[in-house]
Image 1 (tube, rainbow, N blue to C red):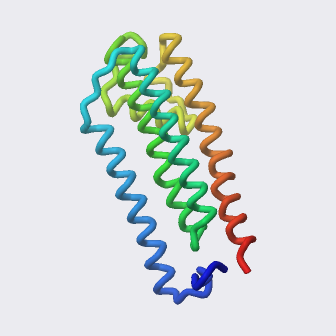
Image 2: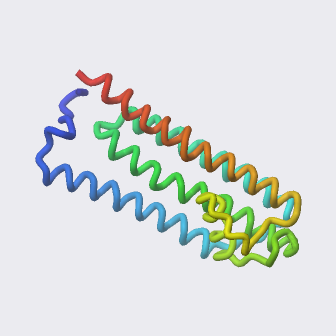
Amino acid sequence: MRGTEIDYQQLPPRTRRRLATMSLLRSLVVSAVIVAGYFLLPMRLDGALAVVALVGGLAVVGLVLGWQILDTSRSPYPRIRAIGALATSVPLFLAVFATAYFLMSQAQPATFSEPLSRLDAAYFTVTVFATVGFGDIVAVAGAARAIATVQMVGDLLIVGLVARSLFGAVQHNLSHRE
């Protein structure tokens, strides 16, 4: 244990519920801001700049994840922090790809089997993430297929490696307590 911090299991049940609820609410608010930003902020970039925006967005996701893993490893309540980190990182990751798909479709409507609205792009992103692939929206152009492939690899990384890193940070934190 560090300093005067009390182990989570030693906290009164009411305090544990409050900590978990506050973390969940914080994650919900951050996720709502991400989704609202995706649907409300203006987006106007041509196809080539959409790829640059995607790379920049993925860099931001990487930085946020790195910070969250570090913060989890230092948190007095790492399990709660790790769950909150996943609950905010996944929507950010999905919003980055939905934005790229939307911008690509706006620049070149024939990039997909149909022109994509923001909702359509979000739907396509989630079907790729969930590996459902209903087939109603399909990446037709090579660039769209390449980005969908990058998303698939990123999906595996975010589900496997990032989850493992966050939970590894939890274990590291807990193992270094007295």
